[in-house]
Image (cartoon, rainbow, N blue to C red):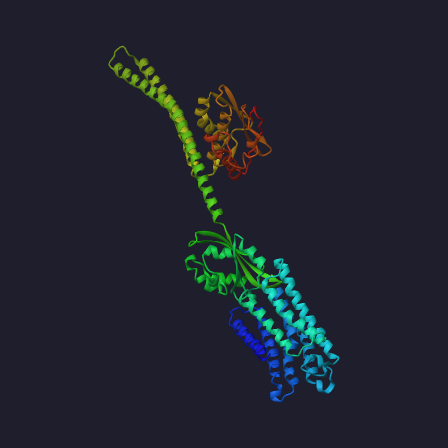
Length: 588
């Protein structure tokens, strides 16, 4: 018996110093140390009781000291369950009331010789002991606190894991053994001596040792919950109030290729220093962690970790229990795939924009070739006519039959040719101005004032070639003063209208001798420009997505970017809107 009591004391001391050297400084650690101190007091003085005959000392005097542990241990167990459930509690003056009954119990015990309220007859053999009336107050109070503490442990485990975590079961088993034995002994249902109680606590110490050494009791993570968080695709780490890592999931270890021992119980600053290649600003992070403790806001930012070549959206939140700060959660959401997808979309969009730009340039070049060909040929013809007139005039100088009237006629013919050249050069200048504007709008975004007349003129110049090749006639219906001035980028508006006209031409699928109506109307203070064809119309699946995404009915010959960009241009640059009305096989 002495050996078992002695071993209990040794185990308690080992556990005490093992937990004491742990860097964690949570309330759970402190209350657990108090439990061990009270257990040691109980076991040690009961152990001394076995030497009472040798020391010639009444054993009750050793019991006086052992009851320091026995009276306050139920209170300590109650606080253990309370802290286990809430992670952290704020001690107040009302908690001191829990110590009143244990203190009274000790005073009644120490003055028992004068009133015998605790023991009427004391004996180390409980069957020979006669208790006083106060002992029942002590028992009821002590067992009530013990049961409440165990109940909180059980409720927390069930709530978080659906079944008991192994740590909790060991702790509950360790506490239950001495409680059951004491109840049986106190009510004389089982013959025993006072030595049985501390011996039963030997089993308690063993259960505590297993919970701490094998299952890391002070970590207190329910097993089922841990399995769930380990399967979460996002990484996380949990910090206590001292910024020490108390928890993390398997995803974090796998993502950053680190071991559990390299992370657990590490100060966050020390942990980050091991990740120097990630270029994390430690001072800035620590400032953020301090702000979190007194704020309900979520701090988040994006970070690229080069060593693992991953992008993360990092969120930092406080963890509260009953409105009390108990820790910090750092969640690392892997957004690598999202970033890569966005880059791919951007690259594809750039390719589509470039394709559309080249298509527009091709259309411009075709328009230039067609529109400049006729005036150039006309100017060439005028030059030939002038050449002939110059030769005729040169021959006539020495011809006596040529009179003044003939000279005037030659000069008049030369003037007519010069006027024709001026007309053609002016037309070429207009073409160059229009084409230059369209080319510039692909790269710049300038705003200016222009008239509807100027707008129509540019549209006619640029679309003349395409309309002529398609054998399509475009009628301009001007139902508004064409000198009304508009403000914006005329080239952008020309490009939008030309794109719609091109779509209208293509709606005829190569049919010739068709018409397109370009109309200008006024609705309140708004200018309404409409393009109407009488072609094939649009399928319903195209109508539903026309301005919402890049969609085309031209197959590989179209990108769907034209109408999408046209809609964006009208909305963004002119604060306007584009609508359509289309009936399949009837045009729009």
